[in-house]
Structures are given as structure tokens and as C-alpha cells.
Image 1 (cartoon, rainbow, N blue to C red):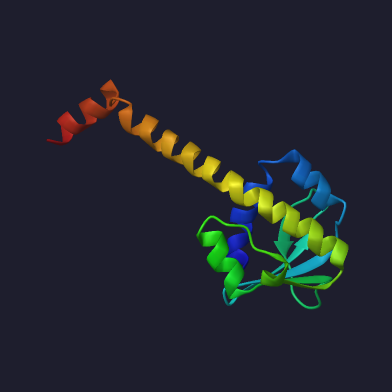
Image 2: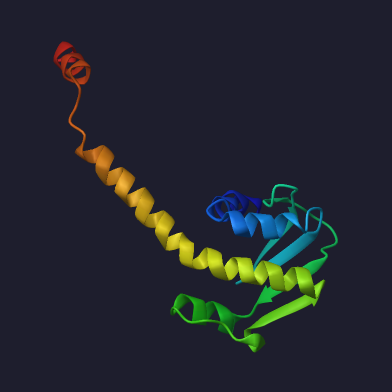
Length: 135
């Protein structure tokens, strides 16, 4: 599941506060269990996640009820999420994940706007002359 790390890190980069909070836990390891997927990571000195394996300092499990509530736009309750190990780290990561979820929509809007803008750019004279030369 290390393929998800760049996505999570992109979201973390949107918030300096989140990065600072995570950087305080540099070297700590975590495991996220979400809908049957297991993501193991290590917190870096700059507040991002790197691939990790082995023992986790904290393990966070999102039960099916949590996934359903999130997908319906709701907030999971205490019984929807399991925390094991370092509770302070687990709570900090949960807080971060909650804030990332709301920022993900901002990122999608930014990507969509960039695609729309690039589609609206007229071809340059070089592009037109290259097409004419090929014809």
C-alpha cells in the first residue's frame, strides 16, 4: 500500500500545521487498517510519511461503520475506530486525517481548474505549423 503514501503526503503538504504536528513524532511508526487495506508508514523529520514495515508504535483501524459514515459525509464516532499502542500518536494522526479529508476536495478543485485552463489555451503557431507540415 505504499502507493498511497504520495497521495497522503500531497495532502499533508497542504497544511504547515499538520506537518509540524507530525514532525514532532519523527521516527515513530504507524499502521492504518482501512477497508481491508493495510498501510504501514514511518513519520519523517519533515512531517511526511515514508514506507515502513514491522512493529508499529500505533495501529489505527477504521471499522466498516467508520468507512460508511465517511462516505456518507458523516463523522465516525469513538466506536467506529480502534486505536492500539501509542494513544497520543494515534490521536494526533486521527486529527490529521480528519483535517486532510476536508482539504482533499480543495485539491480536486485545483486539479480540475488547471485542466480546464490548459484545455482553453489555443494552440501556438508552432503547433499549427507542425500539423500543416505533417499533412
